[in-house]
Image 1: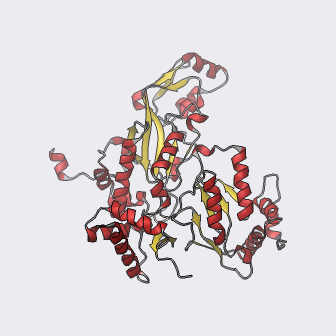
Image 2: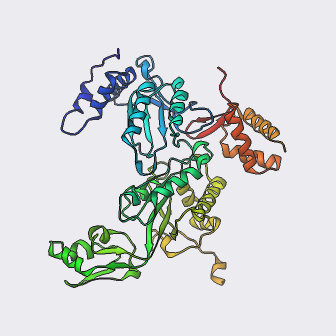
Image 3: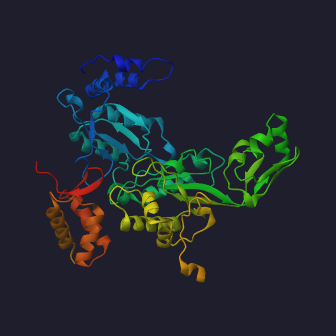
Length: 394
Length: 72
């Protein structure tokens, strides 16, 4: 029978109409002693205003350096059921498509071997199973792998690539985000399961600049679908939007970041050569505007949460690349980037931090990409590319 | 160089570093490939065998490292 704890502070977080994580942990605690002690320790953390978790160490399954994150209570005598409370990451499928049956199977395995608590999905995009003991790791892995699942990435490795729903559910996808994510996952199995990088590396694939997966803010390599052509304008549909109450001047034209649009009350005009393909107008006037021409992606590098140098957004490295199977050009580019990182990166230095430390020039030269205006992140403020004297003599 | 020899070199390198420095997989690949005059892929392959055999393990201490498993 799981031990019961008084949780007056946590109970406060059950109030209100929104679903509460405390309620969920309590439900799990009704049948799992691990979830019970998790609740007890959390209440103590709230009371003492400090955390009681440690992570890392020597846990995993044979042959893998990723996918299991050791987690331990620093109060094992007081909360023995969470003395070991390891996290298991399961590689999620592209865009998180599951059958209800596969979710049931997963949860049954987790009820059998773990705390019953999950986190769908963690910030990495994996299926996160919260709380198990060291001796249960191999059986969990065997159960999942026998059903076709595999562990996700953790540690100094490639993290599980993730993507938006792309062409599976969205009309704006300029690239097949699902296929690319699947393909990268298959190609880079070693990089994901056998950590060999200076630190973590994340791919996130968005089908267009709306960037539903927030790739630009949370991936070392952000892949964002774009196009190389004009925006086709259906003027009859523009008129319909206006008739239905849309203020095209203030909601569309004035919001254009490059001011490439004009509207005279009858006709919407776009100066395509000035368009930065931000998707604002297309997302607002779906029926009236449509990208045309060649489809591909922009490759950006370097976003991350605060750590050594604070939060950064990714910046453009390759303004346009065709992304079609087998994606060899892109994979070769990625391998060059990793080579640069491997050569110069310090322990726990993200690739974006390395580019800032060593300079964009060195990075671009190493990966064989020419400097182009689209790479300039902050015009007139950030001279990211330092020219050498010999460059002017060419 | 035979794969078994490469594995031996890797193991010795990791063993020598115990208590001094935690080695990352890339440290091992760089050092052994330079010492033995072989490619990094060959070192990687031998390292994979050692991990699969359980002679070496991955650990995580603020970064991922390759170490000798603790004695039971």
